[in-house]
Image (cartoon, rainbow, N blue to C red; front, side, top):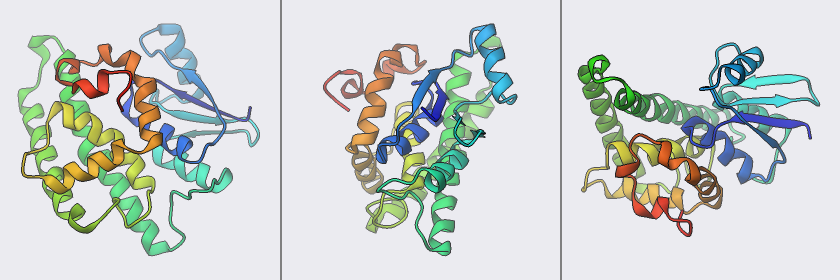
Length: 229
């Protein structure tokens, strides 16, 4: 098989690419990366010295493609499916790219800050940094509540790259920093994302690994149950 995705089912950025692959039924093999094992880490860093997942390896075109946004655009260009994840118009593409970056930088990154701080030794924790991350999430939630008032998806009426980014970002964000009660449009958007078959499949594959998540005690029961997305 031409495509191999180097990933871990618990990693939110890996979810983003998996959702894109499942949206279009793209054939690929998966390679589970265990960065906690020295030999596995060393082997992965030979592929991509930065050491960040996911990475797509395309043997047919002899390309190693890192970074989630680049991977999804690469798939859209070289392995297009029935459901394009970037619109044809350049202005619309810019909008999708903007909101893709928004979810990565202003939702996923602060979530990672909060999660990593939870697993640090108490003496090494960073309460100031966690407070900054929580403030960033609060601002992102406010912006999304306004944006989603009259939208189905993040950028118009079609599921796109931006929604691939939104799904794992909001999934984990809603656990570490639940949405405010009054943010009904954000909550409705989240439920539309969770109802997406590609998202449900990704969560189902991650479910066996959820006990490893530092905030598993705060995870809603429906995500821990085998018959629920």
